[in-house]
Length: 481
Image (cartoon, rainbow, N blue to C red; front, top):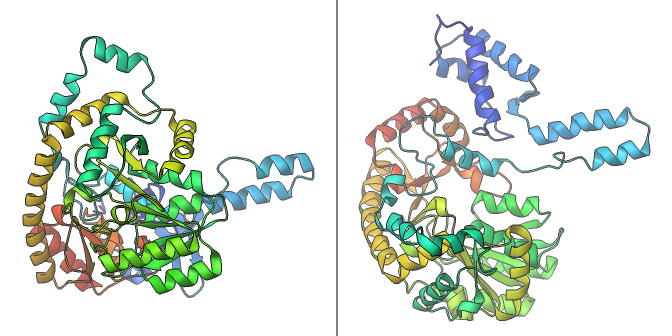
């Protein structure tokens, strides 16, 4: 709240609030600030106070004014490039020009994708956060994980794990356990085809760095997770967004991309797709694999939510037998985010190339946590934990869906899995700004589009949207818009 009696003026307080959110990337570059009149009404101040606050942000280089359009948050990476260019233009030496062009930190890095992640790490309130991308910590609490770590934290075993590098491909006992897990999903893979990673995102990065070069075309589902768009963009890939429907990706669009651009890779979340919750149909999966064979591209199946879905759900890697497909999953969502254990399973002919990339990036992965996880799997602890979590999630989903509908929202996709794809009827980027004032971090629909398109949709976490207080605040803010 802005306080009149504070040591700072109201304009300074308001500018400081926006500046903090911009610098911490809770507000992404390109986001339009509320109009002067709207902001004055929201904050209970005069329009002149808002004008003074926006002037301060302009002076700090945090926002830019666009004629007849309003105030927009500047891309700080591009601002650095502009500043560097001014300096470069004032220097005649070719040597200095080359040095400046090679200076670190000047390349454009998409920051929109990290806004939500940064917000998850630094909640502005103690309230459950609707935009959160994982289970709340209290949902993941268990005794068996600490018992598993203690089992390998004593005597000679701890010394061996601590004083030596682990196996390059990952702990042998874990890879064997993961091969058994894949068999239960219908995916025929030996332990030799499994490589452990520092989370599922690391697995995706290893695949990209191995199979792609800057300038290559990559097909990615849209809507999709903004981190994947940004990660590929940062590697210099050219992204081809493929509309995702209830049965799977739009195969006609994919076929056209193949004819025009010869993409090297397609990245898909086939089970409990983020953010829609859709699951791939068998018919779509078969046609997709035929397309991959015909046009010679690999399919990366990101099965991050595998533990929340039935084992019999359609998976591309099960149908393909790891011929043109690569499987990726992890345990951050279901078990222990801090352990950062993920893995990939690949065609035999790609394993050594993928392993070389892993060695160049991280050498090995933490053997202690890998051995502890293998024990959790072998003892059945992970399976029982997942069953309990699925049951609790089902109850949370029912309550969250009811509250969302009572608040006037509809669902753009049938509620399933961890996330709901909700239509609010208003611009959710503007809604997200206003909800920050209430202490709530939203996941607006624009985050899930490669071109950051305005959207009335938002992704909600069913675990963190069971509180009627959130939906009451949401309804009040939306009505005011």
